[in-house]
Amino acid sequence: MISKLNILIRSSQRVSIILCAISICGCQGYKLGSLDLYRPDIRTVYVPMIQSDSYRKGLGEQLTEAVVKEIEAKTPYKVVGREKADTILEVRLVDERKWVIAEDAYDQARDVSTELRAQISWIDRQGQQLMQRSATELPNASLEIVESSGFVPEGGQSLVSAHQDAIQKLAKQIVAQMELPW
Image (cartoon, rainbow, N blue to C red; front, side, top):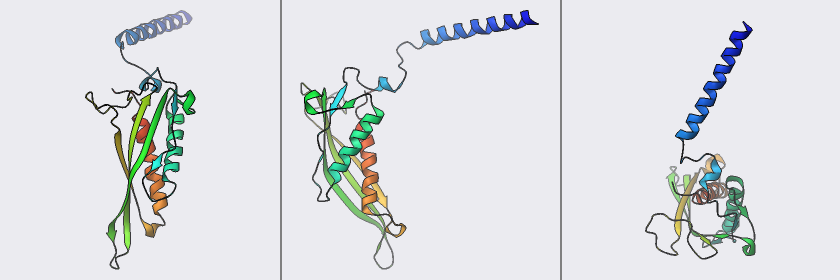
């Protein structure tokens, strides 16, 4: 009984070794892990305070904080000061809109939506664009990202909560643009 068990263990070890060798040889060119989604030549990013063209106060500061947290949480990059950074991620909130989607019989807003529009540009020390929408990108052209969020005033939601939701979504989209193209 023991010799049959030893034979079974040895044969299963051999099978697992063969399967490992086949999987390693068969997967040449493929990358594993989230770190391979990002440029290996970049270690640090500087994120200046995001400027906002909106009349609503604090949107730029909130987006800056969200982008920095998202970079630190999802990428291998470290956010540092300008003098130590390999790259600079510049973002500008260029538009903020709000509109009523549905009203009640008394013309009071029941469903409202808000939209934030940002232009982003990620450059290295030499001024080269690191984010590109296509292979024929114009030099110094920024990428534009739009994010929206809705709220229901009757449900206790507000424009502030909708903006916070849109800012979180916008920060995720901005950091997703830092990934290498597929």
